[in-house]
Image (cartoon, rainbow, N blue to C red; front, side, top):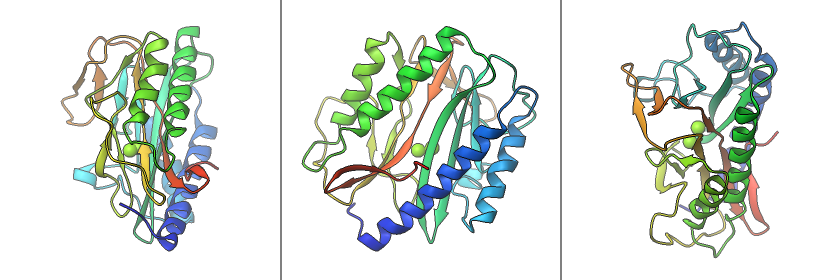
Length: 246
Ligand code: MG
Ligand code: MG
């Protein structure tokens, strides 16, 4: 969908709230705190900024962020899990301003992590930016997935196919979906005013996943590490504009 300038301004504002949720939760990450502590930090940002949560109550989700450590890919429910030195943790945040959504995630090291974990984060971030670069008017949407996949596969990693990115606007998850792989066709032509959430989920081992009994947490099938990063990006006349950067 093509968004009007006043709609894009609301999405910019929602994006800034998400960026602040990232900043404040990142500052709080250290060994010994729980994932529920991070949810509290994110709630404070939403309240201070007068924003609503798009995560809380989504199909019954009980928190304002998703926290997914180590071999959890996405959708972890914040709780009593205590972060340990050497963990990596994905923190996915969202906010609504005047009915318009922002959605973005980062993966952070907890203290000092293995070289293997550090490299996974670096390559996943690089794959996200390679995807973002494809969001230019006239290009085709699924070039995003091809670019993400090229970086991740060159790194020797598995690219999760069970979960994908999405268009975003007056709902968090709008059509079309944005796979992190080449889906076999080029997809729709990109136009100025379209907004997408691009979110590679990259695994050290297999791309296969399963869902925990809580119905939310998505795990790597082989128990190896997974990394998830995401931004909300608009196609503008001057190229991609990332709404969820500070
Ligand atoms: Mg997200
Ligand atoms: Mg998303």
